Image (cartoon, rainbow, N blue to C red; front, side, top):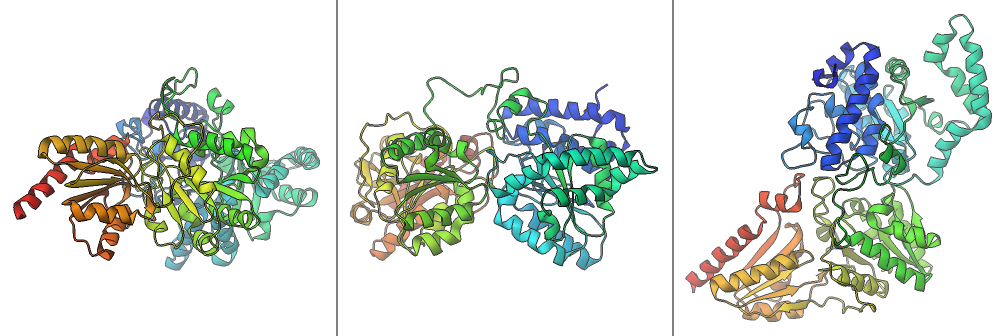
Length: 631
């Protein structure tokens, strides 16, 4: 008899006999596989934490007790156990369905919203200290991936735990992966804790000996002091113990009974405690086990084969793959060119560089701030660094962008993938703020291509420009434009006129150019006026000469950008016109001043926010009629 359908709250999980839990775990896995096959999603991380999440809900009581999941992309199991196993789960990551992450607005069981790595420990410590200040007794549990230990924020939190609270439980979910395979000294350290042959032999022998003693099983299951002491003697003193956290582990993350007993022990601890739990990313689905990078966050796929349902033989290449391919071409000819990413080589296309020129590729782990500073050091020594990081994650590198890159005018190239919407991921992953946060920085160049060929030209231009350069481009497929054999050096700050016009001028960035051309046709037909279209190319510096020339003869200007309207490209146009003392009506088309929800497609989100073709056209027509009426 199915069990999952009977689970509507954590109390139902507690009421189950322990012997029923393996069946429930299997049903949860099948539910997640079925839904993500249809919708896409973070299948691997969720399959890996099924038993851990069950054990957490067996021991603790949400919403009174607080679970803070790092990134929260592994929260699907938690959702299923907290009353969200219905039609809304069937539509997870789609319009009208559940978020693919945790958010306070979705459930009282979600005490903290997140979508970026490294946030859990600092937030959990803040919540624990707040509990202490209020004198309440709830438990605070931070569930952190091992990849999050490469985040500076996480290490800053670890440094403060022992001096801030006596009661905090940290679960280190160690599966050796973030989006890509974990890298760096922390990953090596954790591996040494697990794999030391001498430790593992003594560990096994000592455990067998203690179990034979009177009461020995209790010592094994609850104390585990022998384990910590033998590990400290044989390996090196635990990093976590040095920071004041009692370390227990490694622990089998798929043994629900064992996990439950360890969590009960942690629940009673009178000092901060860290449980090092070993899990297998993708457990229960062969395709996810064999391709952990692909199934970290997968598009819809066929369950039997694991093949993506969206793959088409004649589909245009993705922008990130174009960038990776062209960067590899340029790097092969110039050994000074290197690529840097922060645990996202497949998503940025830098896996192509890694596979072909591994000596010119660097993955720094989830450490965006370090990636930027690392690039600065390389540039000072004459290397040509290309930093490929999603727009939303580059926000973390803002201080060194100003302090280290721009202030020293270093020739670093930043490729900002996912600029614009990442529809199914939602507000934590939309890249809608980069123009606004880069525009005030002196000396930087910000550009956006209209197609794959222009992206190649921009990358080539950036590599030959002696100042900081940022290239933003969207997630997903390009236009299908062929890439010419010899790239072109673009004149900095010069726009491209795609269609001549007089009365109305549309200045657009990137993927909005296709809609701009269609709008020009429709407006010409409906209004009987000439409509020009300009590929702005540069958000900074603007082509002020062309803008002023057109604005003096036009009666209406329209700007279009896949960016928040506040402080973006349209704002730059308004400022330029003000400085030139040109008064002209300007319609700014962009995302409104609020966080944009997740949705099935970009088109669905545009429709929901008044940015569909008909809404934009109607807005321009109404403005034009007002202009004509006034005259």
